[in-house]
Image 1: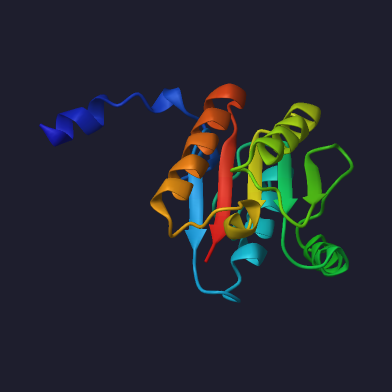
Image 2: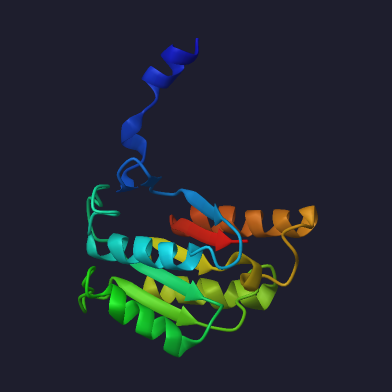
Length: 171
């Protein structure tokens, strides 16, 4: 029965990135309307993971993890200002746990885009990767099932190949 199956599940197989919220290897997509604050929330999540700071002040982050944050939207100057303000509450150290990538479009559904992101993953060896936002990180459209399946296959491949947890905000 279902209760026995749940009780028999091996909880030791995956470790929490954020207790009761995100586990190792998860692929998390945060969906909301434009301007709802998805990127700000993802930046806060990323900083908490990189610094082992409790998320929302109550969800434990058991250990620091290397985070690669790929920002494909907005101005670099504005992002840096926001991060500086956030670092007053979630202090980032120079231990190499947080890497920010800025680009107009990572196009993870194209061979060159995949190669570029894979090179960043190999160079920085993150445990968590944020692609912000998904619609700017691909050439196709999320409303097209074929395009969405290509992106899903890429994420699945990277999860298996590199063992990364992936966080994705999108509208």
